[in-house]
Length: 81
Image (cartoon, rainbow, N blue to C red; front, top):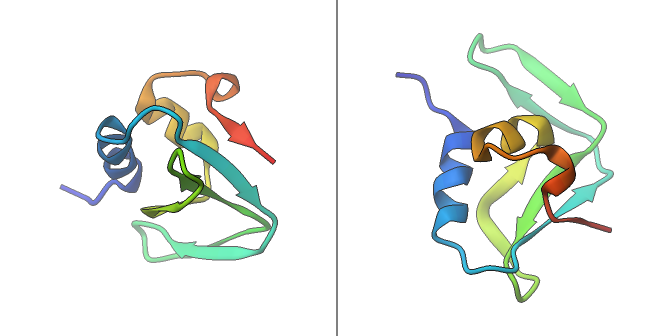
């Protein structure tokens, strides 16, 4: 079975107290996909706990995939500036 980062984020957030949030960071980033191809993104997202500290392994690029893993709409995610 392939590694699923968004599944891991779901498990992390299930154990995280209420009040976690997401911030968009407008810094370019790149990742390798399961085909070992490098994919570039002009920004990325980061998960933070209720106190504003970054959550370990909480960096990701596709907010739609996180919403899908959590079974919620993108609009309902706690995205802050």
